Amino acid sequence: MTELGHLDDEGRPCARHGAASLDAILHLAAIGSRVAGFNHDLASKLQGLMMALDEIAELSPADTDIARAAELAHAVSKELNKLLASNRALAKPPVRAPIALTELATHASARSGVTLQGKLPDAQLELPVPLVTHALALVLDAAAGPGRSRMLDVTAQLAGACVELRVTAPILASDANASLALASWVFAREGGQLRCDGECVIVRLPIVT
Image (tube, rainbow, N blue to C red):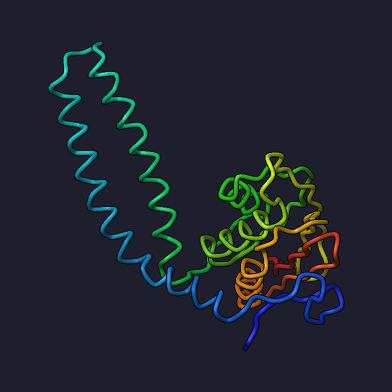
């Protein structure tokens, strides 16, 4: 069966972590094919919910338990709307936009629930931000593993026309193969690459010079 994977530090298929089966990738693709329609349906329902909460707030006397509950529910619905907007952006055709490496890393770490430790250089990129953010979040999530202490050491340096981000990951999650294969494909499409040297996952992305 055809397999997809990532490369090691010498540019060969990584033997340390193996490859993801085509079945695993197609399973994720099948789930992804539902995203656009699901986003549309969810946006419609969320809009109705927010309108209902607005009406409850207007009808409720000020400084009552009902008014405070409606205010809290409205704040939560706004956060849900932000998450939905992020997911809808990911499902749209990729469009390149400028972004700083530090900002990209911040978005990816927030998406994956991982805290990054380390100073990053002042590098400017131009890429499809939602898609590459998602790819980097996949890498961080796989590197951090399922434990409670989801903190990762990162370093980065400029290397010619690229920036090289090294994420310490001595023990990758057992189900990381598909995530790394997908992330590797995204980075390669944008002129970068993902490699692994056993101790670190290395992400190279082209910079704006």
